[in-house]
Image 1 (tube, rainbow, N blue to C red):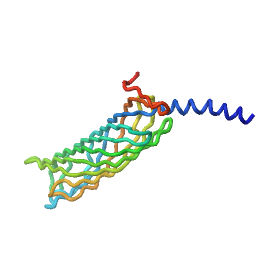
Image 2 (image 1 turned 45 degrees about the horizontal axis):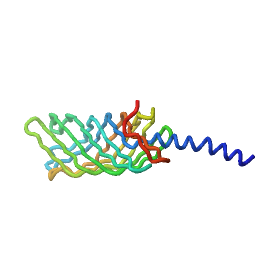
Image 3 (image 1 turned 120 degrees about the vertical axis):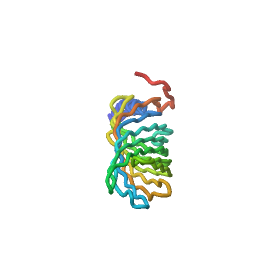
Image 4 (image 1 turned 120 degrees about the horizontal axis):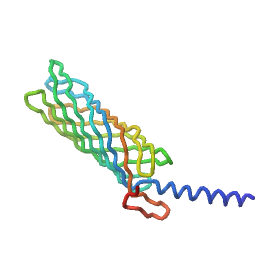
Length: 202
């Protein structure tokens, strides 16, 4: 009787495990809304404020293994915050980052953590002449994806702590980034047979 129960469990669980393995994407693209909270202190004291910038965030992730992948991350943010002395400054902020990402897969929920590094560029124009600064930036964070279908998932949230050094006239920027959007997934791998479908199926 015990051997029969074991055989039944193997017959039920093993196909489910293989089917779930096929749901893991080899390649995925994310795009969505993003909010960046950043503080900038200029050495002259002319600008000292916390800015909230609205924008977009996009990334591509190539999953090397079941849990480990590489992410290329891009963001663009825009605002016209008020200055301490009056007036406003038109601000554009862009980031270009990349680094390893670790993902934990379940049937409907995927949790991920990543460590990214790269460059960021900040353009500030108070109406006379634009001041453009760029420098090295690192970001650490993670998020949660909810799987809708095999090909699509919703990024419920992504939160990152970002530190950047933008030029000689600026101190370190301590920034917080929050993103949400949609994920498109391709090239699903059968972990048991190590085969993949390289073209998306509808």
